[in-house]
Length: 171
Image (cartoon, rainbow, N blue to C red):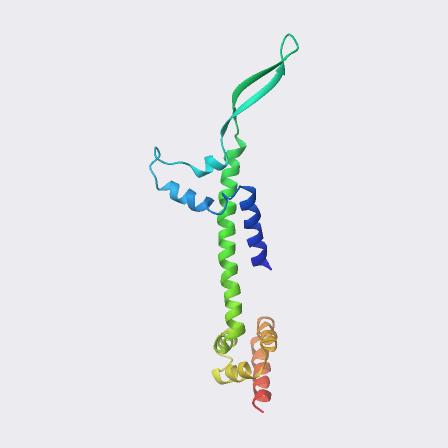
């Protein structure tokens, strides 16, 4: 669910910036290695600091006069720093979540990975034979409950529970 959330967040942020958000951080990193005179700053492209403003006001005779001027947008300096931070934060979250989902998928479909995860939860307490017996005999759901018990039980009690399950699984 977290992975779907971060993907949707990136998608909507990209739509908000007209397709500029996905490559924003990469372009900022690439821009930093270029010479000061040759670079086109992607942060200024997305968040301009100066823009043309048109003001309409009533003149002395009551007609509307149009005044063109340059407007400074100091808040965009803050916005560009904020959104570069958000971009890197989203990338780090996305990588962490992809690794976590990959780890969970590996554990679901690979008996050896399940055995190793169960064994290394409490390295010296559970032998390889016991971990293998439990992993081969219980379903993925039962294994997950047993794995979560390892996080919440005292290690000695957990070892006894796993040994008893291995004995019953052996019969």
